[in-house]
Image (cartoon, rainbow, N blue to C red; front, side, top):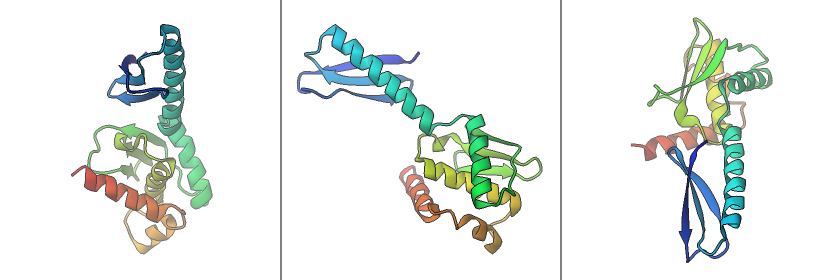
Length: 163
């Protein structure tokens, strides 16, 4: 269970909000709430935050299942990865693949990004299983995905911001 830090404010009148800060969950709430109201809000917000994070931070098994769906939809099921997993040692690349064992690795920095961005990076790596370079044939495999341009722009913006 994550540590929950409650920050009360007399200026806050009605709204209660929660967000993750490192390993802690911060809950912002009005100072006037009773301990019972506080606990009700904390329980509800922590559950909602966990649910949202599970949705935008899929497990390795969920990534492999998503890769299968993307391959079927955009690559006629031709790209068959042996594994797809999150890694923490990729800080300059969003993803990579090894054609020798058909494994795909996605940078942990993608966690929490919109699903269409993660799908784009996953599709990009799936296409590399079929075409190892960035040739015209490679881009012909990736570009039918409707969010390609938007996802590339999103990732470029994140990269620029992190410089």
